[in-house]
Length: 145
Image (tube, rainbow, N blue to C red; front, side, top):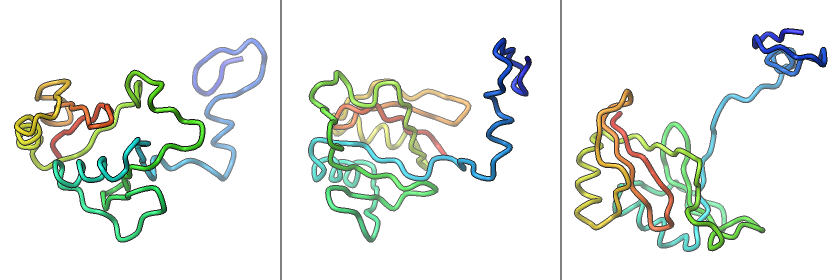
């Protein structure tokens, strides 16, 4: 059998896009992003002082939510069972991009403050972009709006 996705399946069952399309419930996309961190206060201070993020009016216990758009961004205590000390680099495999009005200027400010730059500024299809490591070790890419 060939699915609507164009993939052949010898079992005769359709597990592709048509199964999701037939339901009324669908996922719209990312709605909230939170980084689990060892020190919420220090992580929040970094994002406020170095990136200029502002806190949202309310945050749940153990977290700081920033008033970012279109998707809220937060730093929070680790969920039960998460051992951040047991990983080489948190978030490995996840690409987190933050939009800025001037990525080069943000890069220059972070570099001057001694923040580790993992990938220098470069031109991309999404504007000028660079990647830095936050204090927890997450790789964060900043790009122009």
